Length: 246
Length: 159
Image (cartoon, rainbow over all chains, first blue to last red):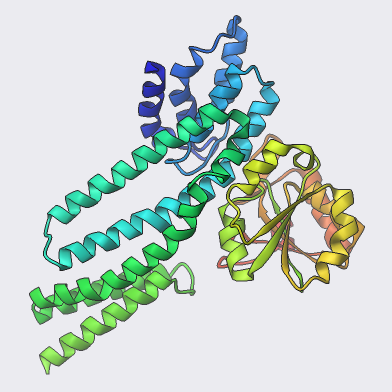
């Protein structure tokens, strides 16, 4: 039990040793070590091979990577052949990355930021920022722990178990929810900002957004929804500022 | 064209495929051609995990997929055909060159013996020769990780 807590804690620094050759591999092995020490191999060579296996190339969403550690440990305990454990880890990278990125990066994180902006526009002040930090971390730590336990319970069958869980359903609604909340927050927080910023400040904000957009555009020419939203916001602020100047 | 994308990607089904390509192409089916995954239930479960409910996943061997390429090409649905390496794609191409006239190199990563050609494309001399052979046989091959990035013609990669 203590080893489980240590592994979960170590996993928080998963990306500290990120590199192009193994990506999160070293971080995975570091987190897995306390649990691997408890597996009865009976032979030091087998244990060393397991540690080397744990450090192989790995890359997934950092908040869901714990599922791969749980599943690997379960497979190691069950005495699965090493080839199968390596294939398990390789197979988990893509799907855990896709699910986690959709759930967090384009889902809960922008959704919570949208809510925070709305709360600020409605007068919550700095408390909204604290609330955001608490909510985001509570969510990611509970998913982190949940995914680890799913892996540990189901081993190589973790794929079917996660597919039948709440996660894919949450992923399906997270993106649209984030789009809605950010879309709602952009004009309301823009209006809030304009109310307390003199015209010159508005111009400064608009030019800032315009410069940021130009820098982003240097990479390619396609505009994302977020960029269009920011662009429109900048135009609105400019229009308002221009009216103030006239 | 109903086979909207024929892609080589050693990560098989992941975010770039499902979201990056699947959404803009409006793909309703992914065909994963892999001799091992075809007979591995638990790996199939893992690869299905990240696929939205409205997208169908078919696991096939080269033999099975080769026999159905014409059917998918004629289907009203947009289909993504995926292999984990260049050798598998080359074997599939030889089954029905007309159905796979354009091939996308989406991700072949570092392994001993491979050298870097692009950030997401490492090739062994054998793989480079296979690509060359495919182009000689009429395949149009480009390297492109995401729809928004530039499609690099294979001649540029090999040259």
